[in-house]
Image 1: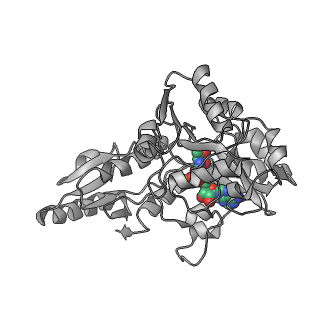
Image 2 (image 1 turned 90 degrees about the horizontal axis):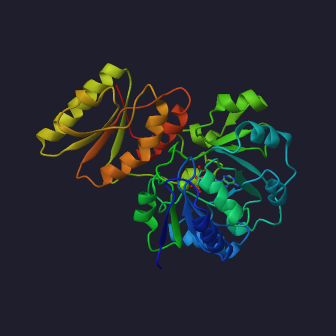
Length: 348
Ligand code: TXA
Ligand code: MG
């Protein structure tokens, strides 16, 4: 398949959006930028089109898709028994990086929800995404536009690497602004439950709807506790080299990483280090990359996935990463990093 590339670095181009909308309405696949990560879109109300997403990504069919909408009213079509919190959270955070899990209506095929009676809904804030959703009929199912098991794409180049030749079009809107997938909150329980942490933190949600819980499957080290979002049980984002997170007091972490990289170097191998702008200069005998600045946590989120992809292209034998317990996005950053590391932590 020939994958069309549409450049929209300077914003929405009507001509390209019209073409992309036609592809979606004909049951095809279009990758597009959102504020979180790039999405791989298909008509969410068309079972066959949704099915193509699973094949293109190599995604397990029990892993449901998020339906992206551009107007509040669209939520009436695809859900039932809408709880009052949905409108409150929409007023506070939509369009934006929040996904709500709600009871689905009969209009949404099980192919889109992975067989579940609930549907995940999100209204993204990216202008290109909103224009595409409107042009494509109003309901766009979109997982992250990566091959299953690879880090989510934060640039159109990442999408091309993974899915070039397998999808109809890629809209290039430049690098995304957040870099980690949306916060998912389940509103089908009496008390809302976070199924996946993201830019919208627990505290931000609690200001709007009161008590919010975190899914036990996210917290537990015990793998027998299954996360409620089916996608969270897979070991995503695993880099080729083993990844270890070094946790503890900052000075000790630096010392420990230097000790580990030196040992690697003496055995004739080269380690990789995920550092920050603040610590970049202190590491030796390793390929050192700065993920961003501790003073601006968004820069850490923005670069996490691209750094993992970069290390895959280098011949490093092992990767050591500092840990990032930052105030707003810390839980989201550490959730993704821990998954990439397969929960391998060195405590100092
Ligand atoms: O930021 C995002 O949410 C991005 C952009 C493209 O919007 N999308 C995204 O989709 O991250 P995906 O498919 O990579 O992740 C969706 C997650 C999966 O873990 C899936 O299991 C969960 O959402 N999910 C979807 N529908 C669900 C449902 N009805 N109940 C529970 N979890 C659900
Ligand atoms: Mg994904």
